[in-house]
Image (cartoon, rainbow, N blue to C red):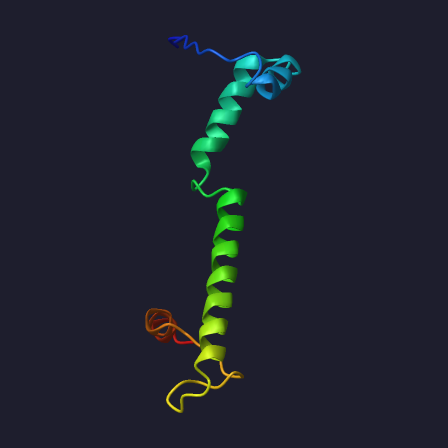
Length: 98
């Protein structure tokens, strides 16, 4: 088996958390390989990404609700009690059979 050595630099301040974690590892190379493999196996979606998407949906829902309330005086608009769905969202839901 051929061994390949790869090196990289860490900033003593900015990467302090990584350095602390690395110091606690008995086998640093194995720990680094496991961490990299874990990252490779992820779909690329982080908890932060999920939180951000939820916040965007929440804000969009508030905008839609505000539009629905502002236009409730118009007979062709849904009343306040009915959900207001953008046409593209409604079409996607229809395709899902919901």
